[in-house]
Length: 79
Image (cartoon, rainbow, N blue to C red; front, side, top):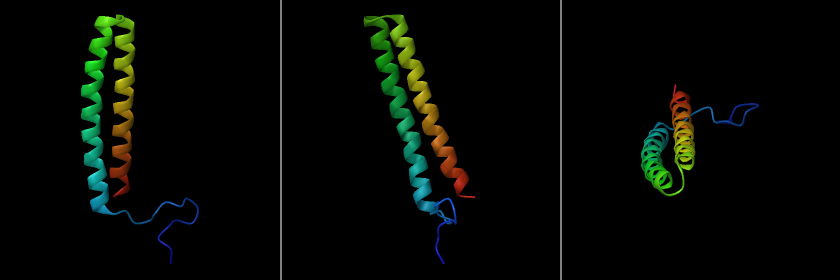
């Protein structure tokens, strides 16, 4: 019998170790993106304009939110 679902192509069984590894890696990626984004935003705020800095900060928060949504989706698949 195939380990894949009939219509979705998504595996029925999820490897616990691989899920834990990816979820912790995504958290580390969020911290890296957040740190780099805050530094870049501060530089743009001082050099270019406050609008460019605020826009960069908003984009960084959106990327961090997307990464955390992926992490939660991975953790939900373990159940």
